[in-house]
Image 1 (tube, one colour):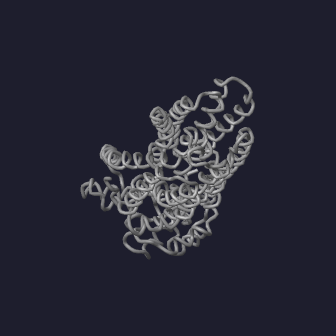
Image 2: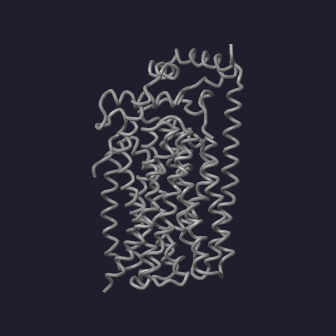
Image 3: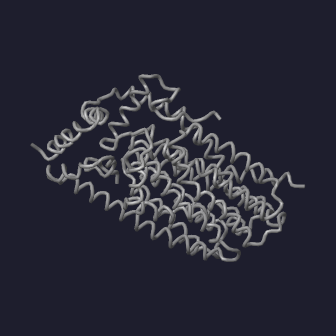
Length: 466
């Protein structure tokens, strides 16, 4: 009898002691052979109902948070009498609210459901965005952006979690890429919109879960649930909030190994998103043209983001698809530093390379998180914790490009991405090593590690995507 057969036998023995849901999930893992045509049709139906809505919402939210960079070039500091320090804190205070709210938001999303929670938060942040036009002082700008951060905290980790509910682990990078690519569209659209505004100078709610998705028939709901149970393996698709899973997040080494490269990637990303119009302005373009010239760099980044996501799902690989764009961004920052006194065209190419690398790393980065944490509650909370930690980078980013110190900002971002690159490769190595260790367990070792309740991804039968 092979080791794999013995492992399955041991797992079968353990599952007989559990509830019928887990037994069914285990049996389905070996007996579930759906028609690929039916699966493809189901996937397309989910795509058309879910992704346009998530993408549109993220487009609006990212536009709301970064358009302050366009406003600066259009004269915000002069209109509100902001000092450089006050402007930097206006950028950062958004992320203070965002960080505070992210984990509680994920818990509420799990309890209330995405449909009510995300749509409600969107209504509030839309109202706050309109109120930004009424800000006349630094204090009013601070307050509005702080609460904007609190309510926008629901969307990004919430969307990553929702995608993990409807798609198998090997399908998530592309879907994350498609909805996140709207962040680059927001940069491009924001620049074009700001260009138009400068010339003028003087929801349908999300359905909760596959089990209750109204756009699917009952047979399609059953198929959607079953294929995700099969994909999850021993990490069952539990529906109720679980405090043991919540607590397990904070003692799991993977959370911290994902969090550190995340913050080291998101700091340069937000710095670019917030300061790109200012950086382009330094290429000796006039303010209005600077707004427009941000669009081509974001357009290239959008295409690259989708291509990297497609490749990541095709090869069912995450680490290299996170590391290689990071390396591309490192090259971009090197070009920006070396070409500091060269032509505007050369520096613009360097900036485009940088933006492309940083943004195209994100889909694989977030799909890696959602793929390797089992259990609904654990995945939701882990996603919130990691993204919250990463968004501390947004808090830092507002202070990277201080007036007259552009090269220093490039150097700081370059150093962060170099460390991130090394940590990504280390994490990939650790996942591969753990998978190998689990494959080589004896039946006795496997049985011992299978003991306990709600093991999720700690179960020895769970296979990490590296």
